Image (cartoon, rainbow, N blue to C red; front, side, top):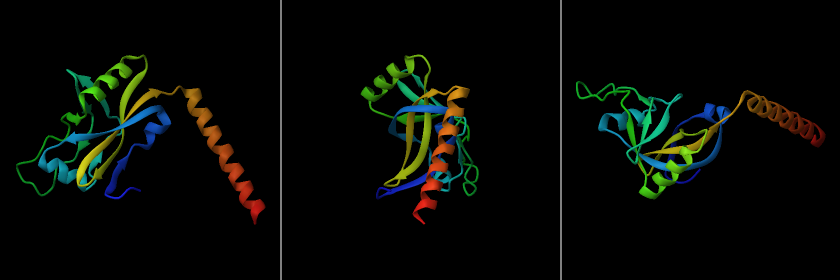
Length: 153
């Protein structure tokens, strides 16, 4: 693990449901109480995705619980949040997403030097037989490792 990075949450389902072609780190534009809730780990992004609108990247279905100690100055938990990327990166992502079947999925949220960052993946959905093949491959690898451990004893 790199110095100054604290993982808040990972989207493990994304690795099962999508094949990840590439990933990119981006910042997240948040309000004050949202940052406090994210630091406390009160987030949910199971079915979230990112869209490119007017050359800006927005994340949707990213739920950040209200901060318990903020009183009346709380944020809207389900508002769409802006992701911070360079223009060239957005153009490159836009070309990729325009290809058939590609989508932008948040893979991980973490703190890097005190700032909230998102690892965004350019993903392509897996079919049912792809998922079954992954499960079978994982089981075979597990059996091989088990046999190797038994032989080495």
